[in-house]
Amino acid sequence: MEHRFQTIFSLLFFSTTLLLPTHCSKQRDIILTRYESSLAKAKSENRKLIIVFGADWCPDCRALDGIFADPETKTLLDSEFVVMKVDVGRFDKNLSLNDQLGNPIQNGIPSLVVVSPKGEFITSTKGGEFSNASKMTKEQVLAYLYKL
Image (tube, rainbow, N blue to C red):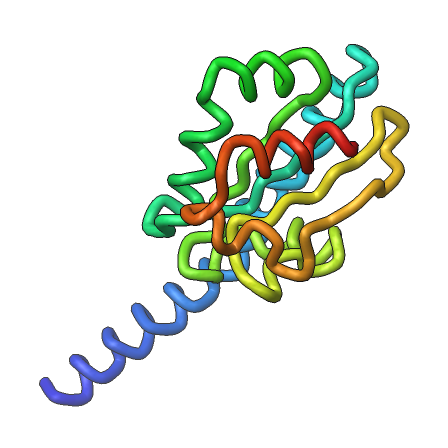
């Protein structure tokens, strides 16, 4: 009986581990597909693409969301940019896009990457420029966006 339990446990363990890479690769494919479709939209509308890496547990990410929802900021974003939000979880989700874009989250979130309508890299907040967004004013965020 004990041998049968070990066999069943081993089979379950190995079958579960075999599924993990498939799940991870599907998640990677989904985020990269979202990136490609956001980039295509930016190109067709001749707007820049802003990729916002963040997480729902992050107070600075929520603060930046609030500033982005402000009417003045939203008007600018809607006219000049396509915004793509990427949930990085606890720095364990959607990292394939983060890696592809040069690891912008290395010094904290939220982190922004800006890409031209042609798909060319413009800038990144790799230095953690928005990682203290809860202490930033709307005017500071707008000043950054207007420079783009």
